[in-house]
Length: 372
Image (cartoon, rainbow, N blue to C red; front, side, top):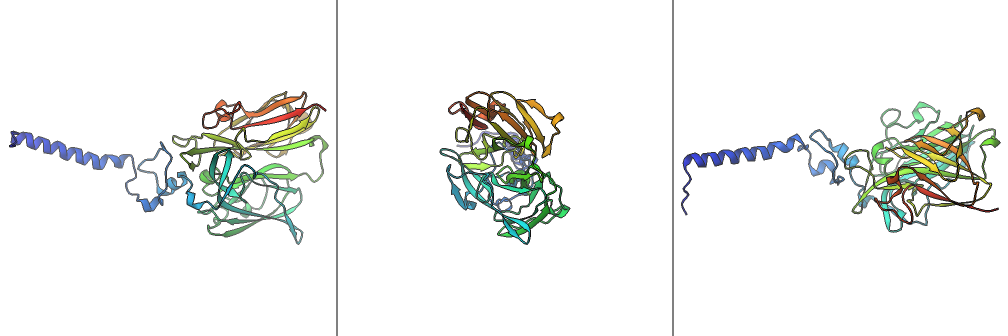
């Protein structure tokens, strides 16, 4: 069939087509980095809705990407717990601990797992426990798919032992690289350790643990009948892939854990009426603040960020805002029998992927106080 279009009309159509083609080729360059190839980002999978623009480099995209399931070296069910105290050994008067990083699959709920960056195959990493005055050596072996370091948060130590990558040390290389951290414990209290290389990624994926230093001279006013660590974490898991949770579009969290478990898979703390419980709130979380509350009456705040409060400075509270890196030691008394909650007071943080299970989810732990 012969076209009835005039030459002017054909020219107009051709012009519009060329304009559309030109826009289709150039406009995406204003929103996306078209200079990157699949090889540059290693086939990384970005979270749905993550903001990326023409200035987003490959390294940033890799740090935001999902954990590659092919990097997983072990899988652990609900029977395996995190925050287990790590045994040490003595070498010429030095207390020696061994830490090893790896990628694992970790159960946070029945039927729900996250792909995580772990120390010694557990989330949180093992608890390091020593005494003020101890000389300590911590051997860190890196089996992650990227370099790493470890920072000893809040400790006074030699600068070369502090941990920031490319600042105080070269990163520990992947594939079995080793770094020995050595220092003398001059403080006491509640501290933490965490990755300080690719920190937005690695700490969000589980590279953290508790560090408890006993005072050289025990203080009876700080003792309790029971102790319990509360290490907080947020997770982003979609369609079987785990991404580092970040406070930005596309990176928002949907699961929350205390000591590597989400309620109702969290622990139940058993105690009797009249007994005391020391809770160590540890801000191992990476990007969010959690107002942590205990039911059943107020607690006494006895230490902040590892520093013991003088008796006159201690105070009663029922909620403390635990930000990233912060620590609060509080002592709570079981005044009456029953099941009393420890939980975050942000309602969304007590759900599992926006769903409540058996009364809640996420950042919740039950204290079961029974009569004497």
